Length: 212
Ligand SMILES: NC(=O)c1ccc[n+]([C@@H]2O[C@H](COP(=O)([O-])OP(=O)(O)OC[C@H]3O[C@@H](n4cnc5c(N)ncnc54)[C@H](OP(=O)(O)O)[C@@H]3O)[C@@H](O)[C@H]2O)c1
Image (tube, rainbow, N blue to C red):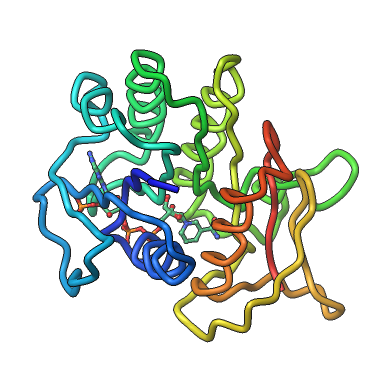
């Protein structure tokens, strides 16, 4: 598959790139500067692009089988830029033949009980409420894209650089926790789950929680 990956220079995006390349996919990685360190694989091309610019997105999407996102707000930016990115990526895709999108989301919008989302729990840290809300708003925009086969892959509450074990659990709309109630996934295993979903499409039009 030839995959256009927004956010390829980021922490999660670099690991998704590695996972895609290891499975034999071709990756076009997008960053605003057009530079991504350590990118010497012949199946990896780096291009410059602004994910808030639908015209640029449309031009970049041409010739790709799928669009992937590990986009996050730049340092110091209003997290609501995620909605602008979602709108521009979808609008850009609309102008092309590409209809498959796999998006890295946030844990805050995942359910932790029948009626409760993680963001609504007392223990949810105040300082991450704005980014969590921004991810929920972006999800609503993506949900409205009827012509797109989207999957919104949301990590566990804690996601950090770590080990690639190749294992994870997933649940539609729900936060994945372990027997102790902890919710964790390494960025490497998040990338495994993300690429599994890109390849298999088991959770199309689904907000998919993944964790260990
Ligand atoms: N538990 C959770 O819910 C949880 C935890 C961690 C992360 N996340 C989410 O996972 C996603 C990835 O996280 P991360 O830590 O990998 O983020 P990161 O390292 O900050 O990477 C963000 C990426 O977005 C790109 N980007 C920003 N603005 C852009 C623009 N206008 N056009 C094109 N690219 C742009 C950056 O590229 P350049 O700066 O190189 O242009 C970079 O590649 C984020 O959305 C984050 O909120 C969720």
